[in-house]
Length: 295
Image (cartoon, rainbow, N blue to C red; front, top):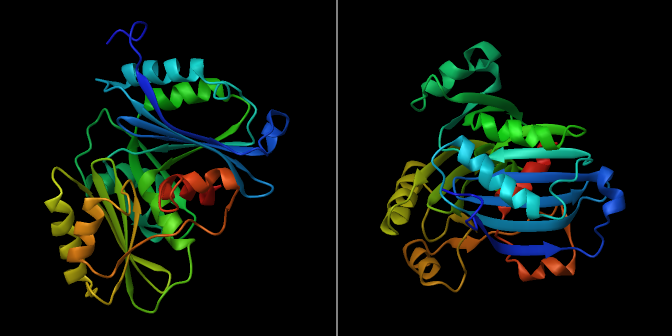
């Protein structure tokens, strides 16, 4: 890939609140959520809990971490804000497929890699990170791209940087989103080529897992398996859905036909949104906003 000659990113969405001020940037939290082929950017005012910016980009496919950094650098160089280095907080969230959620009581820094290896194949060359999930007593252990983190640190040298993972942020988003029922609730998040699923009861996490999706029928299969395992009724149970799916799409209609109880999830009430965000469906970017709850 010749980064200099190719347009290696595409803007999917940009929303900016009128209350954003470059002069108040030291009061803002910058969230960067990086996937294999995508990047989400959000800016939140820590004083008012108001979401000021949300942006979504698709990225060109890359072969290694070095190429990923080159793609990000091309985007950052053209961006009017991402090279500014005086944010109050910066959260870098990875969407890597290798992760696990471990009980805090079983975790120590020395056994992080060993715990992760119990859940997925971890290569000696993989960089392994971890952090405490704020919404419950668990530690999120995951692989991350070391060169990407190094690039981000080189820009935001004056900001506190926290490194997180999408799975833990989805747990945050669900567990900081009352009211909760005294029965098993299924929360689904459809991402690009992935289905993430959590089961909670009375605000306590019972289950979380992610499934790579090759064809639509696999959504039905995996949701069926979870409903059967946790005795969630397809017609009368509580099934909420967030993510990259439209309410009027044929895919949502098909899901609703198989699971009549399924409903589109709401936006978190712990953050404030101006009218500019009315153009974004409330069930989208649920994971991105979950990062704010790990400050």
